[in-house]
Image (cartoon, rainbow, N blue to C red; front, side, top):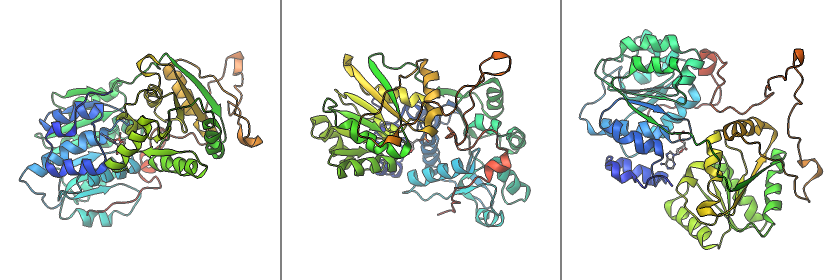
Length: 437
Ligand code: AMP
């Protein structure tokens, strides 16, 4: 379990605490526990954390708190807090998080990125923004067109710095530095910290506090692990077949998304298997009810997302089933650690579809253990099984083993491929452009 800090320990403004309760957050994640008090104290931060750790709230909550508390107001054509993000998808997600946490406050939140006409963004920025989320290229375009000035900036966040560099944003970032006021608070986040990134961090930060979420690299020793290779479309049937085994008496099923969790539960219930879901979209009462039934043994299947599962402390989980493999390998270790607690033995089963093979490889690389493949149970359609590898390893020239290249549709760990150029990344499809509320 994580330390039993609660959000109320941080003494965030009341509207923020209300919003957190509405989001169903009960306990801060480790990066939040470490970063929020330091950022609230006004310190610069160097955070090493991946997406999925709760790092957005780790910087969004102190920012909302600080802006909400101070008497200053935004001035035309300026912003008070700026969050730089490498891609438009991430920028939109960050702005959505700010809106969710700030929904009982009266701060203006805007997001700007490339690939869409600039005119509307210029007009929206005319009265200024309290919080602006931006990709670096479009930010500079807006500054060059005199639609925005950074002279009144109070807080700067640089998110996913390593991806910024991968995407070739080093030049725009270096151009932004001299435009920043000397007196400001800066928060810098990156999943990795090679020398180039720490050099960049030095340019942005003053006497930063370093916070890091240590990746867990060892799997619980007493957990027996196995993987079943299956067509994505046959996973639900596979889950039902596996759950027919009565020796599985308390099982946590993991999905990557909240909707995925709801879908799995809906299908299980339809086929007569009692199950409930636990995730951030559920009310506190719903979560408590689901957990209570799981603890008491009235409901033996609980379907959860990674973050929701963090607050779950249930003894006697006999099985963990990864209905979907996590895209962050450390999450696998956290997930399977939910079974085999207090010295008991546990079993972790993973369902791996063809597009998840790269995730499996990342997991095996992290844990340094191959996960044995298991045959599918009987009763599934004949074409449900897939072979372990999408392509046989071909011998490389000179007899050396070729480096494996995942082919076709590798699910990204991050929103955009590092090989995309900034313009493409900023123009990436699928994001909604969010105006100020
Ligand atoms: P992030 O790493 O910021 O992308 O966050 C990952 C997910 O965790 C998001 O869906 C957040 O809404 C959720 N989340 C962040 N902090 C918490 C928390 N303390 N409790 C529950 N969910 C959280």
